[in-house]
Length: 117
Image 1 (cartoon, rainbow, N blue to C red):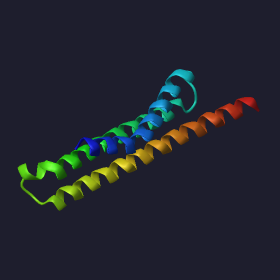
Image 2 (cartoon, rainbow, N blue to C red):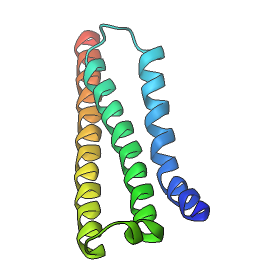
Image 3 (cartoon, rainbow, N blue to C red):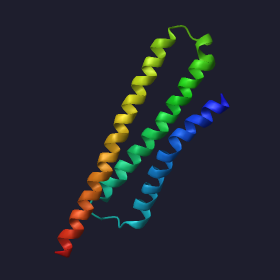
Image 4 (cartoon, rainbow, N blue to C red):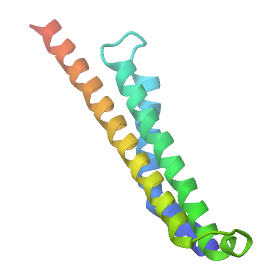
């Protein structure tokens, strides 16, 4: 079980680190009223939370496969399908967060070029 948990963590770690870094940079390196900052912070936060929830869903799925089914009644296939649907929804949420981050960046770049002109 420990090996599976570390493997799942390794798969999610790049996204967790990147979203955390972007969130930290946005919070410390941009002024509070900067154009697009709110969208970018919201997007990075959504990506971070979705990644954490995907990690938790993976832990739950591993627990279900390794020992939880003995204590639960029901079909393993049904539970795995529910986990797959949850992970799919979390991936969609992560994509929405990335779109918000990009939208915030576009607004910030547009505001910068408008001021420079």
